[in-house]
Image (cartoon, rainbow, N blue to C red; front, side, top):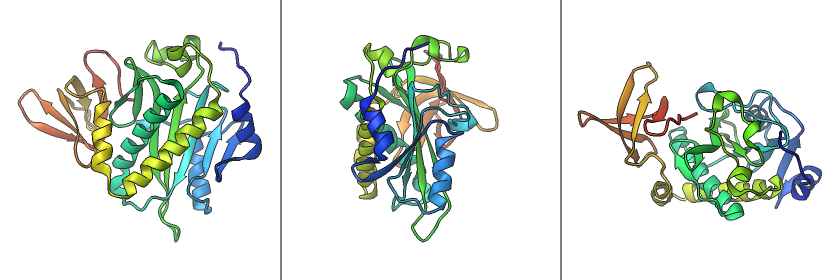
Amino acid sequence: MTELKSEPMWEQLRDEGGINGRQVLIYKRLNSTNTTALNLSAEGAPPGTVVAADSQSAGRGRLGRKWQSPPGLGLYFSIISRPRLGLSDLMKITLTAGLALRTAIFATSALETELKWPNDILWRGKKMAGILTECGAASEKGRAVIIGIGLNVNSGPDDFPAEMGRRGVSMRMAAERFYDRGLILTAVTEAVEREVKRLESGAFAAILRDWRRWDASAGRQLTWLKPDGMPVCGISLGPDENGLLRIKDNTGRIHQVISGDLRLRDDGTDNN
């Protein structure tokens, strides 16, 4: 198991409970930061509130999968946002958050990562982070959107579950150095806030252009397992103007992907 080191910025955030005026709640252990954030948003928590945990017992990923959350090694947190956007914009928010996360990782580590539709961050084909975006109930303050992020920061090879095989990677493994999670959390929350404001201003076309620069799937063969279990094999054409993935199958038909399981056929990784 990986040896834990001192993290002055993480400890400061935990003790002071804030990032540049935004409330930061750091718990020792939660079932799920997204669940806690949803509950807090229903109680009126302001936008920008961050809910983080040293570990999660029931961290959630896309399609109901579990996000592994070993204590003290990763960032497991959720941001409460109340963007001036509709429910139909949820995919745009997910892609926007992914771009922000990629930007923050590069800013703090110089690691060049890629984006895999709709919610993954990859480093050399291995999964470093994932995003789960969920909607809360509407209120007089607007509808809350919870942006949940799981980022492997200081994990070592032996800290990943056996079922992941060699598909997982951390910032520490990639850069061969230890990171203070407080530094990363600050950078990510600021980047997400900045990019969501850009999305609210109507700049999704520009965000999408930036996202496509780092698209890990563009032009590659993949298999889409539809919600009904039927597979579709084809080439990824990348996300469209609404953020939905397009796949061109072997007959030339173009499919629009809203949900379902994706697997890049040439490297064995799947989208979880």
